[in-house]
Length: 337
Image (cartoon, rainbow, N blue to C red; front, side, top):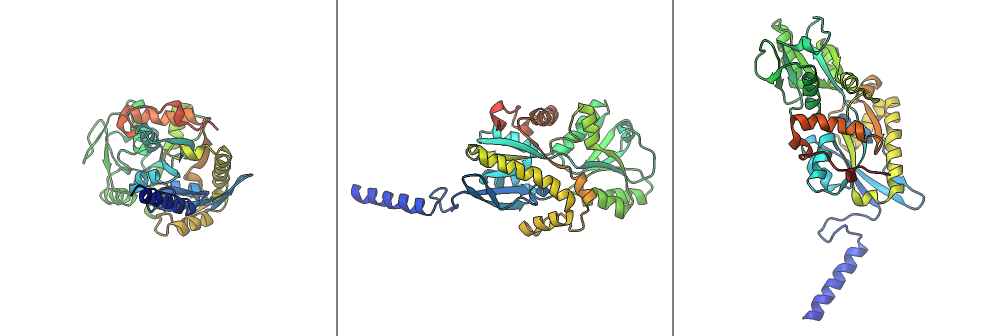
């Protein structure tokens, strides 16, 4: 009996090795193949022109890319070797014991405040007494907006109707709902505001006649005295085992940096490439170079970008510390190159 068991184990080991399985659990993976996942929307642009082949001096790697809905990115990121995820989620996953490394910030905010009227607006205090319809409750962009209000000493609260003396925020499911509420208020002669992300912002301005009043990336950079124009919105992470191959990571990061420049010059092709990966993506093929630029896709690698990234984490920590896993990540989280 013992000989039979040993024989079975030996055959199983040989078969698994021959098929290059990542584990003998039915989930196959080719040798020198990495999976890369990104959430739908502007962050997906960060991989628009990333090649399916990345070569180092010694090895050619296959990159199997996919784009998924933002609602499942946490689960899919843990299944993948490499992932683009919301900036706070990366810290959360690490603090929960997942052996991952932060490679770079790849999207730096694409959030704007719009008005449905022509009334003059000079600073955030002009939003007091008004309704602000917003996307992304509990997300990094939401917490950035709240932080800016807090830093200006502007009272705010969630609610259904405008209240004197404060900014009243009502969260909507998506950008289309924000635009609907703003359009309804305009038809009733009420001035309201909306927090939206590109590319929905340009759509709202062109089709609804709304007016941009604040670029939250600029306000954040000014508030923090940052050398970068924006805040860490989405980041690139990888499993620690992947990061052991520094030659591969160097080529990968260079590919992301090159892609940021490429999509600015080839917006239509960038969206076409994304749709080839994920046909149902929300990105429109009519997207322009101006909109692409406002999606703020730029690669800021670690450890140079650590302080910039932690500025965002500090803001989230003050509002909802659980969103980053209860604490700032330790230095081991940051890829050192």
